[in-house]
Length: 193
Image 1: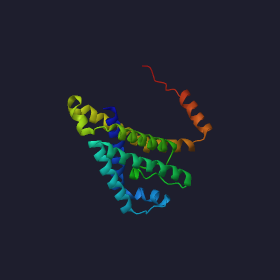
Image 2: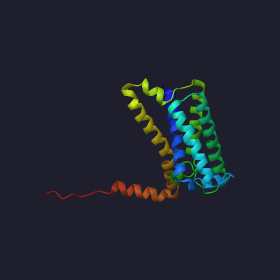
Image 3: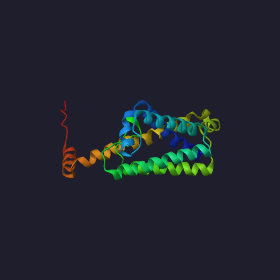
Image 4: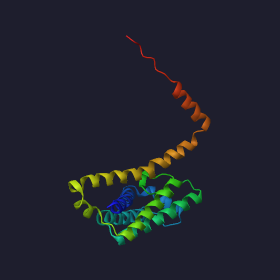
């Protein structure tokens, strides 16, 4: 059950990325260009469509073939993010449309971990949410809710955390220390009546 749930989360992240590319393909075009790939909104939408279909099918139905396809996708994403980082261009990863973030080592790690989870799923042959739901308590509602929460958290790690890390690098350490000291010494005096 755990392996199926993990594959569902990874597949769900893939599907969310695809949906974001369909909604905002223009954010993926610079990433495609930086990688030397055909860079048009139509190509970004086609990539998004494949991600939605593969991710959605793996999320719902599981299985070795779909897990293998998810593993290949995240393997390609890992290589793409490494290449973007090495290229030195200031371009977002393009993974989540308008919500994409700069490619960081966190992104590389999450993509590589997702690939490993999918490879393990190829070996284990886990069920998808459709089958897991029927064997779970309360008709799988808690499982579906927890899976959705986990997908949201992974997407946040890939979109919000990189932006926060980049912003943190922009703030000089001395300024951050002054701000922290000021916050520690700040007191509010309340009138006692």
